[in-house]
Length: 348
Figure 1 (cartoon, one colour):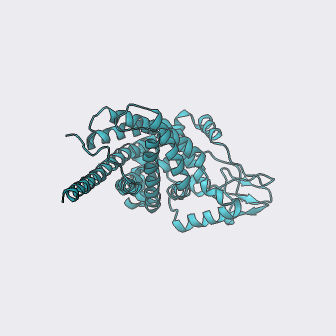
Figure 2 (cartoon, rainbow, N blue to C red):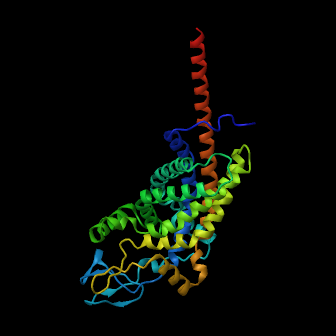
Figure 3 (cartoon, helix red, strand yellow):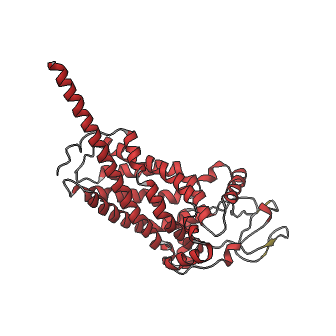
């Protein structure tokens, strides 16, 4: 059956409401996979021989590093607590050990931060995308790549910039066992005092390198797949979203690994003799991981990432499209009633 209201315009508020409809469901479904992915990626984080010392003073009362020994000033260099943590050998092993050693609900660790992040991010991302693609001239059913690619990339930059600090808090929480919100906020407070407010956007570089290509590929593939159907259904949009999300996620996983490592560095930076921060660039970290732990390490956590993103993309885009269709119908019916009322008034 043809959708007679598909050309009816939506307001930004209606687009926001439609985009929120799947955000809560996606957050609940994807958080356990996100926890497992972060834990697996945390295991391959390169060790550092630098310690948490500035001007011969220990930050937060202890100095941790990757190897034992002493540092300038005679302070003892300790092995980080997470170095002796339980090791995970696979995605299923991580699920099992987290459940057995920490409890079922630890698989949803960071869910409040995820919800706080997911809703505004989804609103900004989807609303900006739809507004931009219309301005770039894309109409429903067109087989084009340029408009959805540019709109997707631009919308993702806006969303990442707005949400990056919240995602950093969530990643820090999920990175190891026993991290509490109070401890994370204490680390954030100290980091801001020592490094400035911009430290809250640590990891934004690799996040953009991960998410901008992801968005470009995802939206281009999705719009092309959707255009194959004259009247896309919930099932076709679900399938198009799942397949596009899976391919885009697989290609951008190395930058997701680096993003995790960078955000874990909050409060754990090494300092040289002159107090200069050692912040390796994204591609330096990529090559360092490749050299030290092999090419496979760049795709650590790809299984839970795909298990998270594939259904998340499918649920999110299909519920979003359904929400838009619902509001278009409402708007169209309201316009028909208004026109009918005007006609009756004309002949009365």
